Length: 317
Image 1 (cartoon, rainbow, N blue to C red):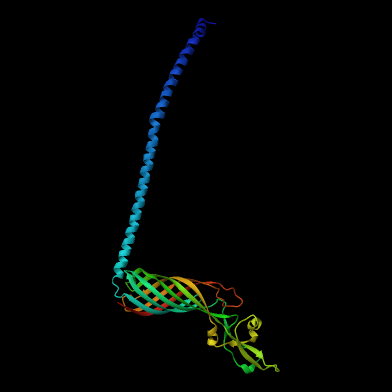
Image 2 (cartoon, rainbow, N blue to C red):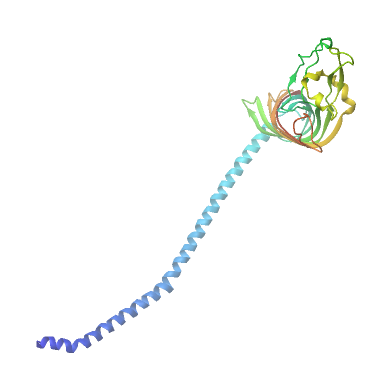
């Protein structure tokens, strides 16, 4: 072994000592840097993040406020426009009479409007209608063997009651679009509700009976549906035709109820004194008892329908 190598091994512990001293010195500096980072730099970043989040939320709130103010501004402009157009109206009262075609029948009514404020009117209506079942079909008995009876009146097979309603409503009519088509058409929203009354009038048929002691001589007898004659009432061969409408007026039953309706109203030539309104909307009603119309169909307490109507009348101040 050479003298240089012997000298290196003898001084190796001193070299290690210097290395560990340098390492320890380096770790101490790093430790101080870590402490500085934790206690000085880190707190500033969450604070900056909080400030950024706050500023972002403030910006969002301001944007929402601007949108809301813009919507309110548009609504105020539209409201002012409606009030301006409605203020040109030269009437305060209106009375009209009209007819309706319903999905479950037909009806007619009397309507009175009173101006409450600019663009808004108070509505009173009295409405009468007949409710028909979707299964109703008129037919005639053309195959009877009793030639002496002649031809009977058309009838509705399976029907046991005529149902009519009378409804008194109170509501509002609010102007929506005052001047469409160069001022020749306005659109309003109408809604009303109130008490109703249903009339159940028994449906009478002329039933055919055979005279005693004969095989081809028959006679008719007016009857309403009952458990005793159910089989005969629901056999087309035993039916001659419908009886007179007024036959069962004294047997009419009254059933109370409530109704509500919502409709759009079109009024052509509004500035003129003559009213010609077109309405289309829907109506819902509920009654204390089921309204039985057909013998073999389920009856319900409630009635739902769509309608389109036409009314004419007059206006005045």
